[in-house]
Image (cartoon, rainbow, N blue to C red):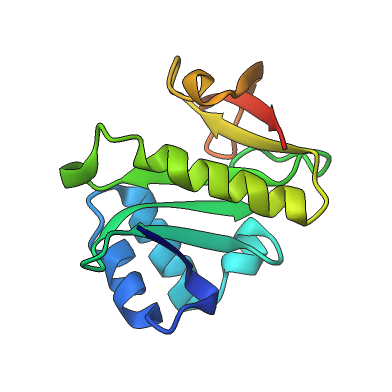
Amino acid sequence: MDIVEFFDSEEKERLLQVLEQCPWSAGKFLARNIQNGTIEENLGPNSKIFFLMNKEKEVMAFLTLTQKDCIEDPKLFPWIGFVYTSENFRGNRYSQVLIKHAISVAKAEGFHKVYLATDHVGLYEKYGFVYMENRMDVWNEDSRIYYIQC
């Protein structure tokens, strides 16, 4: 398995196509932000999109590590977001591989905590995330905020 960061990749067009064809609307949202040049505006500077690929170069999972997410709070960052595992690869904890990678990148960048907002209950706790509180997100939906120590 390999982890590739979109903006450092030599396969940007193929990875962008993966996002465009993602059955989850958030993948398409990421693709539009890349195409429109609005990633930094919407997710903050130095945003990263990590892809987990198998030896056949199939994308198994992706996620982001960003300064901004769906919770507007400039004191909380970085955020892990857009966590997605392709349907054919679910049930193998591939998202956990990417989450651990994102946490290690955040730690290397000097952060002590990483945040995550979701409506899932019980999913991220098994990866070590601690529930912090609920808040309304930018789409006026109730989101659970979690954090994990780096």
